[in-house]
Length: 422
Length: 159
Image (cartoon, rainbow over all chains, first blue to last red; front, side, top):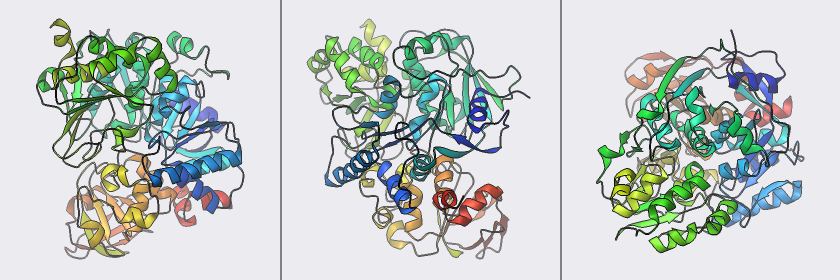
């Protein structure tokens, strides 16, 4: 029996000719990642166990992105722990305020991760790099500590769900709509412990940013990873970024899948997830008209350059509705600069949006847009759990940048295609 | 292990186990004082050492924060029983040496407030209030070893 793409990458990193779903293996890690919330806990575990050296100070990434620029004294003290550790061990990829971006936009942009890599990150959305054809998965702080100490970690080889994409997405249908639709179909534990392997001719119709968004939310279906084949778009993206030799793996033709889900991209509508689970999906038409107080456009899911461009194309010459706060967060400093150069910051400010430095902030109810009881946001983020963006009686509706921008203008959940006609 | 049951539903996410607004202080006792607050304000103040948490499907979904199993463990809970666990929560619990048991039948049948005893070696769960008993799925040997060593780093150190 053949192997899936994920299984091939794991086998290569475990030094085994083949692996099978359910095998427990030890694999070599190419990159170990942590952020300002999870790294201090990992450092505590690392030091308590008596480790004094990291396995490779060029293969560890620490990005202070969640509560930065620091929201309070305790957050500032956590950053001190990471800063001191990075300095002590000479961590090459250490990103602090001024260079930091939201980690899962930053690492691909900076060419730190690439095809064929085996990556763990103490952040659940580490699955994002599957878009590049890497095996990449979220872990906890103790796993990060083990990774920093040894460059190795244990994995249970996952079985897989194949997601076969066909057709071409219609206007205002993006990677976000694809992944929300998929989660709506299979549920928040539909891919529990499994790989989501994307395939089919529809892959070529998706931009790299679309693929990052889709892989990013594999965890929201419970998935261990979400992976795309490497094609010309991948090669073009990594060309001037990724300095190592990319390792391209393909699933065997006779690879075993537990299930095949077929999605015809041409049939998808702009899709939203209503509170309080990402699987609670509706088409934008079904949800249109629902009153909102806030819009957030950003995050590791949708804070990339194409997201900024889509939002600006809708906000240009329009105003954010009275009573709505629209917060826009370019995910990295590079994206911020590009927004400036392309005049998008001006578009956002003139429309009445607040534009922030890169931070995860509002996505997890940290800072920069926390909501009160009774308030509702449309957000391009990834989770709409109870209390995720603030008070337990506030609500988050997940959507694409196009739907979020249109909703900001309309003051309620709105279909961007209708707004464009108006 | 023996204690009173705190019962919760399906898809209990790490944002409700320990809301992000409390992640700026990773001290286990501080985390424990806010554990479950967004869905059960009585938990942190009412839990006793040894008590058992029972959840439904996909327990611990969402964020990778290890603060979640740390908060539950530091609150005094001796083990979590659920129909299924989200994978990062599952890893994190094993890695910190915190016992968790997967058992859909027990998750379904056990009621809030029941007195339950658990033998983590055999995976036998006994609801002393109703007299029912259940068999949880055993851990693979490799994982059993990590738990026995008291967590992943101790396991790694001894290797």
